[in-house]
Length: 150
Image: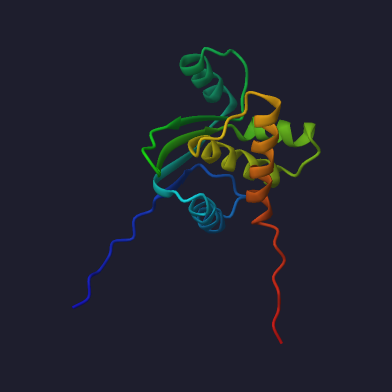
């Protein structure tokens, strides 16, 4: 007897920018989270306009500035469940400011939200340095050169 398992998407992207490969990003997030000993219940990434992001930032964080990501973490124990709201406009500005490609900066932001759910902080200089190192690990997952076996 075979049990047919319904394919449920545990990582969802809404309005994802064309330059991100959905399948590769999902697979990389799964591996990245697993490396920390966590599992994913559901992660929802919502890519929204700069005005919608500003409204969220004002409503939920009481900040009247633009930001690249807002995370709502509903995780429990070692299982991640979260919603992320990302402003491609802000990501593009950060990419220009830090001389990064938009793809690399978007991957940084995608991982940044997950890292907060894993318990990483970014308030102190030491925390920011550690967060950046972990973000770079995620970005590097997309730039590993394939090895060919003869």
